Image (cartoon, rainbow, N blue to C red; front, side):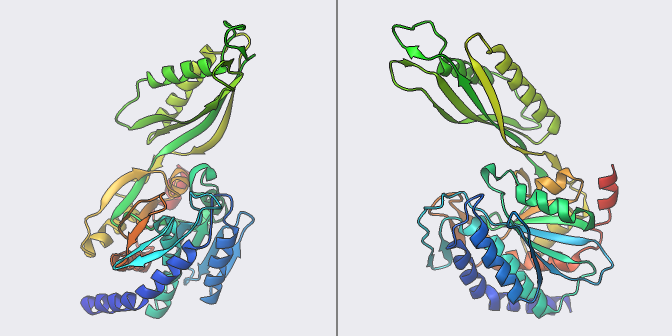
Length: 387
């Protein structure tokens, strides 16, 4: 009996495969830089409405489509982010070849959005009825300095009714991200008096002070376990080769899978900055983003169910740590994972590419997870949030 059901589901997904490919390409063609997701949000919202679902769009342009359940169980939230890393004027050319689809943001996360829309079609065609409501969300602000603002708002709004959350990404089929890599991102700005490099020699240089801070940061010892890292990703400043720099800034990224280590690293950087506060120099710190660390235990039902589903599909799960939309529910005590839909390469490049055929397995994964929810999956959510 189960074998026949699996065959029928595989046939149904095969029928929908050309549709999801077309939908992925259409979504990819709509520019959606972080903080500029409105147009893509409107498209996705309308697509959900065409499928007969009740749709809410909030002030941030988050889209939530509710598929009602029987009302006897917690809700399951599946969330795919709307935004991309590319500037608004980036040329978008979507190409399709033998077994592949290519374009900037095609897998990250045009496919994720298309999969949620296709999932609604598959569940309707299969007559799947869930005990609790299914929330299909397209959220803003996952990339870069979006600081997970979209999923934060969704968890604020729906958190009390959620039994579990799965963030859905186009790439990395087979992964089960259950550990949230926390981060603290800030801009250090150093201001000094400036002056001529010869005539005012001896005046403090903003660049020299900033360089000294960075050099001391790179000498800080950090643990390999729990993994903790730092990076200076951007430096700006100065006027000319013969000018004592009046200003300089650096954007710094601190990360750890452990909240205590992340806090310790942040405190160490703050202490370095304090040691460099000298007369004639002003140093300011601007927090650009903070993502909480944490983890959903491996033995949590949502993790175990995802692992089991992947193995049933012939895939060996890879449990890992990353910074995703799952960070927020994990930090709030809601069992959560991030999962992928296909294989590909070139994420965050103009030549990003995804493989088409493995999407069948990615969609089957989503259907099976929804079918099993909330058998065991939401059982620990209330105790986790009460702790």
